[in-house]
Length: 297
Image 1 (cartoon, one colour):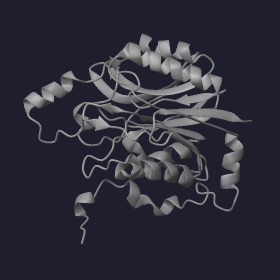
Image 2: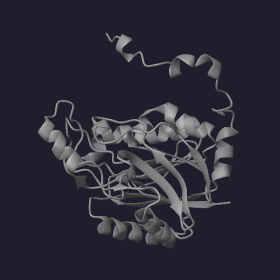
Image 3: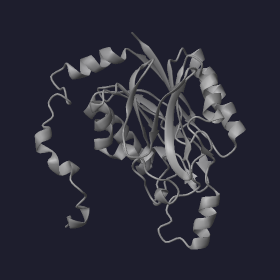
Image 4: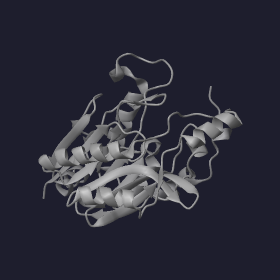
């Protein structure tokens, strides 16, 4: 059975009503393409952080940072219910700032008109993001109308263990939501040459290929605060092939494939990566970090 997937590179900020208008327009565009699944970026509701860093920031700068956070939304609140109603019979994945009491998480949710199907809290935090958010602690997978899914957010894609945990949980489609910016140093006028953009693309293809799953990578577009985003929303097949891509432009990429058939072809060609694992040899991978013991020539 064929599934049509759309993924967005789009700009989102603090204005919630504008976010709903953008989400509504993308949902309608995806519906016109016959999409069963639409993946929106990290922080689609409320926008991302205006800057990263902060290792040596002053108390005053920290206070300004905390005052400029996106709105914190409850998982069962009216904001996500509004998006669920807009989604109807389409499955939609999007990012937001989740409130759990006084604690905030950089979070993602997959939902449809029937309600929330799965949620996730970002585990890996880059460049001072921990000053604003608490870290999640698990990689859940869950069933949806388009198959079994998992989610991760931005920096998570740099860790092969994260995608592997989802694939071992039975995920057929992994939605990777991002607000992935250009490099902060050695800026290039041509975004295609940006080294962080190239990393983004390498990670997407590698994570799909090594787990032989369908990988759907959204991203923010435009600018927010000091950040400029690389766009590059894409759908990658289980063989690592890019099926659709927005490039360095804002837009919607769409591809249609039989997910189970594509996975079967990738895993049935002599390289079934999950089956051929040797987990008894990988114990050192999950031991407590010893990075400080490593030396480099």
